[in-house]
Length: 307
Image 1 (cartoon, rainbow, N blue to C red):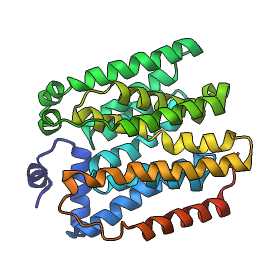
Image 2 (image 1 turned 30 degrees about the horizontal axis):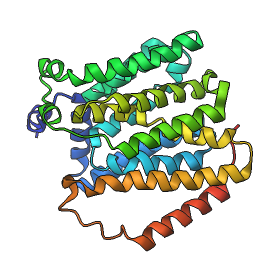
Image 3 (image 1 turned 90 degrees about the vertical axis):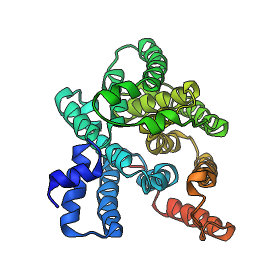
Image 4 (image 1 turned 60 degrees about the horizontal axis):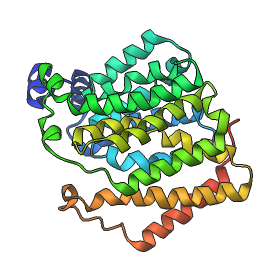
């Protein structure tokens, strides 16, 4: 069908994703092949970003799989938008506003919730340590408050997110505790280095927004979904903690704890009603043990600091 008919059938105004889907449909109508193409784009961007900005690429890949990858298979538009936004990192760090905004517009046209990323550039570039930290707390509060009432704004641009606004999603206390634990360990381990310009400061910005945002978040599904943009912080902060830990024993212990904690967080959503008709055959105890052993082996063999 023509793109106009395709877009009408899709019933969404995120035109960048519509064009992407339409172009793929010219090649194949098989959704499995669509997922292959989608994953090639997603994982290529992640790997490119990790190679450039992560101090430990294998550990970053492990964190990506344990934090966002499983959801990305179901939440296609949002996670494609998140991957696109990762391409804005050099423009945030190098203070290039126009390219940053162009990438935000592209991501916004893949999934409107990408508007949550817009403040990151401005928060990152705030001068003064105390002002910067205070702005993180204020921004997290403001963002969660604005998101709670943003449904009316979305309706003005004919984006119907009423299903998110009408549904409640209670943020897991365990998940909040894990986020707070990461933030405390991150601050203790990096100390003043957490404010160092570059990926350190950017990771600090995202981790604070994610942790404080989830603590302050009201039980609205849209808020949970939009704070997902900041939860990508863990793929940078966990390798940074590993890098700054003073001894190999602490590094190994930390990686083991991360695998256990993130594995738990990843498995928890599978008990939700959304998945009640799915049978996770492979998710049994021997499989989990094999994954943990394989992860440790990959980490031990390939984990070397990038700098």
